[in-house]
Amino acid sequence: MKLRFVLSQTWMNLRRNGAMIVSVMLVAFVSFLFVGASAMFQSQIVKAESDWYDKVEVVVWLCPDGTSQSVGCSTGKSPSQQEIMNLISVIHNDLSDTVESETYVSKEQFFENTFLKKYPGGQYKGRTLTADDMQSSLRLKLKDPSKYKAVSEVLTNRDGVEKVVDQRQIFEPVFDVLNRATVMAVSLAAIMIFVAVLLTGTTIRMSAASRAEEMEIMRLVGASNWTIRMPFILEGAFASFIGSLLSCAALAVLVQTTSGWLSSSMGWIPFVDLYDVLLVSPFIIFGAILLSSLSSVVALRRYMKA
Image 1: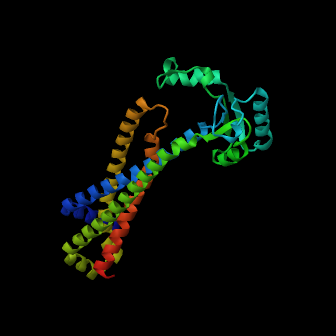
Image 2: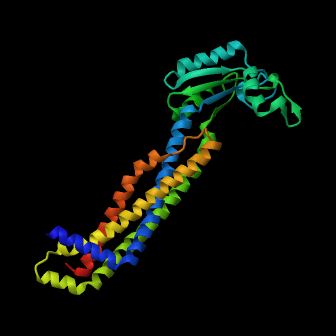
Image 3: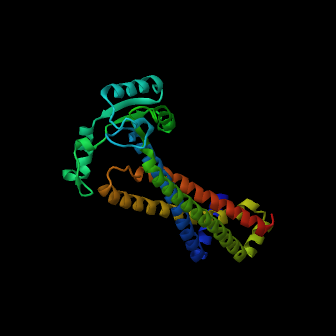
């Protein structure tokens, strides 16, 4: 009987306060859309980092023929085969716990497989370059990419080594920008959630004020405080539930559209997809209902002073 009464009162509240309920739904929709977007931003960063960092290498550029600022290139000549073998021995002996594998790339291989693809015909700044103008290198795959400094300390300034470059340095500025964008999205989402909580509480208080006489009568006939409060709590929870559902649907459309558009031109980047939206959606919906219920409870405690 109590459940039937609570549900009937909730339905009555929803019909009476249609405009205010719609406003709560819209604020919840916008607020949790930003929450979902910030979660997708962070998921995108994690996906890109894990994929790219698994592929990047430490490049040990060997000395070119001619002048170089590196201490290890004082002879002005590219390293001999023996010097290269010595470097590989150092890697095997001193960096066996850090380096997973190494690959030697000769001048000719770099010229044919990399340089000519970027500069057809070998034309670069008005000059025609050949394989002799290139540098050979050692490409190191690390077991843990974060241990780049250990590799750099061991190999920098050794005979035949011009410089040691960590390819992660190329991506880190991009990740910094994305992380800042995520912080901004989270900050805006927090503000919007605060507004949603305030609006829900205000709506519930106004709804309770309009039915003050009915609530007093219910008290006189022995209704408990929770029986009186529950229709109002369910009212706010329902509005937030619908708003959060709409935000999840909008997030799915945005992710599907954006990922499909970007993947056609940047297929080398792993993008978030509908599966990621499905993973975060239950948290968005549960969070919306929980925050709405808590704000309703607080608003009714203050209003009813019970």
